[in-house]
Image (cartoon, rainbow, N blue to C red; front, top):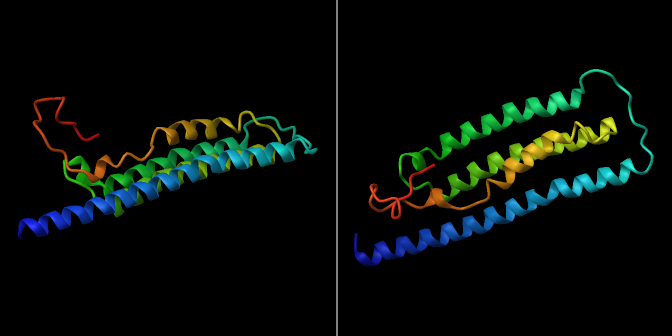
Length: 167
């Protein structure tokens, strides 16, 4: 392959990575603000006269949401590991695999937050049903799109300032 062809391929890959990061950030921001919007709607309806349910014992919405978050998020993490396994071997991941892997985790956490907020509406109480949404939100905000998986690690593995180990 000629040098000119290699430069053209590198430019195409750079454009794909840039597009993927813009798409990832767009999806991340939309998914970030959707639970707040839903929570505002639930608060508005709650203040409009929903009668609180008086149940004793374990809240079924809390159990459902917690079980979903444990199983769904773990499954999404394993699926992302399967999609982006090249990253953990020190290789670059394709932009498509990166976006699909991150969307899988973000959507799993998003569904958990939505279930938790719907539980607040159904039971007409915010606690304890809102607690799983808060935990899912904390995990969600720590998983912002960086794009590190799409870049090959280069440098001296003995020098920590030059080389960064895959996480």
